[in-house]
Image 1: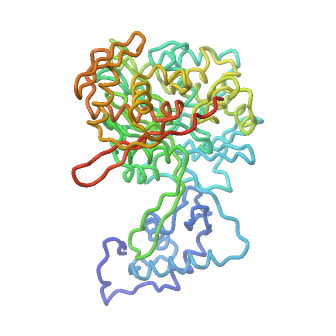
Image 2 (image 1 turned 45 degrees about the vertical axis):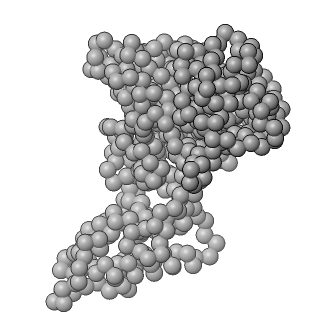
Image 3 (image 1 turned 45 degrees about the horizontal axis):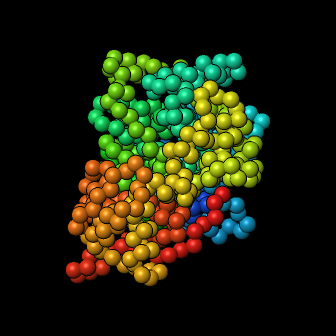
Length: 525
């Protein structure tokens, strides 16, 4: 039998299957369903693990093996054109069925807020799943009503969760923190434990998680510890572009970026912001002239690197950045660190996480206006609100919502007043710009801010010096590139004081330009 991706002309002395025979086999042997992303999947009633997109090479391989087994005709072949025509006809038959319900497709976790249900694929050899409702959680066989996809090179399974007595919960959570080398009150553990719980709520907009620090600080091992409860991997993926991440997202629940670099480009920042809230991704299918695969891409992301990268403000508000120092590394070495995170503890921790998700599902759509009245909840208000619900369950340690909001640095006017770049730009814009909208080059802006720094206005405890086109803040000289990074990172703080900042590029000698516009100051709360 010749595989379509490598096939040449069929030898004239071989007997081949016809299109009609292949269509009959596909429809007779499989249950064909139309999914919410527009693809047609084949389910094999004899083997619930077989759930393949008809355009997937793995379905061709599966069909080849089972067709030979069923027909006992190993001397016959399927020409690639015959297979392609048969698949197209089979898909057409499915799409012509009246009044059919489309089936959702999920990877690792399926969250159905309308029915207050969450299903997690353990991806183990026993094909087990965890079904969670406000009434509790249980391990079940493959559920109906949703298709769970798995990669060809399947990642390691999740630990099989175990139920523990309520009085054991504090012990388990403290052991969880010790595995990361910190205490339960450490803000880094509060951020990690909150993210590791809410990340299963795939309907929720969840921030990315970044682990940063110098070589030898233990960030990679800790990243794997986090993933071992969510989407286990042997090694972190080294993807560095949005296009590569879209491909990875078809096989991994968490999209990982290992050692990405010290700066997000504007394009990557915009893409990452969309990844958190969700968008429709499109890819042309192989071996077709007009086939396009579409799927909703809304995935949690994990980053590692030496330093927290600079990025646009919108992206910054969607990334929980955790920093580790060389002193955070365990002097006993990697083996000792891994021994603190055995399979038995992971099973207990996942059980505690599932207990928390039972409560979270019941409270998922409950409005909490009192929270917004108390504090700015930042860009991802629902995520902060769910952390508040998690805090109500009494896990040891401090507030996970407070740790998250502190890490986000939710901006208010008071915060903007502490940002020297924001203060200098606002003073320059109001005194020198002379209009409600001003465009300026980075070097000219740096010179303008240097002049502003020498006007003698109060700068608190900070030392601000301007000379020509040189600006020094607290002893550090600000370059045009650093100025650009600070402008991008402070977009929200600028809006808090009535200034909008935009970066534009023009051809010729003008190059990069910055545009400042006067806007209304948003109301607090």
